[in-house]
Amino acid sequence: MPRPRDELTAGEWAALTLLSEGPTHGFAIARAMAPDGDVGKVWTVRRPLVYRALETLTGMGLVRAGGTVASSSGPQRTVLHATPPGKRAVTRWLREPVAHVRDARSLLMLKLLFLTRREADLAPLLTAQREHFAQLAEKLAGPADSAEGFDRALALWRLESTTAAIRFVQAMLSTPVDAGRR
Image (cartoon, rainbow, N blue to C red):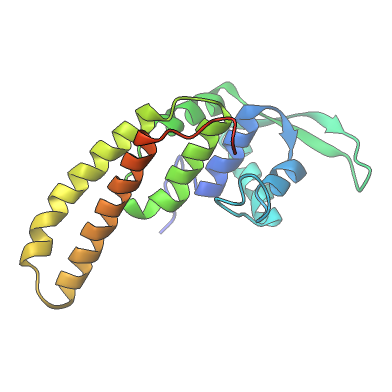
């Protein structure tokens, strides 16, 4: 099933957010998203997929080309900019809690990384995230108590994962990250 046209992947969000920090070229984004890069330590994307993400973002009008720069190790590099709609999308995305606990390792961590890089207050996102996860935990508690067999194992896994995510968010709220330390 194809994804909705306006839904971005974690890699696309990461690339767009990097561009919202300032104009750069695809090679620099790929380097940041490599396993040893600033973003790659949270979400790694191989270089060909970075360029595909940039094409997708350009096609959606969230990114545009804005000239070239010389490269000492290859052809000229195209400098990309986040468009005003792209910047607005990033601002909205950084404020929204993630919908599923399974997305905490990818999307929530990316949001925390980028908010920290911006020296922004993490509390609004973390507070909204805690509230959202608490609502999920409340919905999961009943099925975990009444399920049997494998359904019980699955329900307990979901509940325990959700309560662990709540504890993580609460710990982050209790001891804020120093924006100067990355």
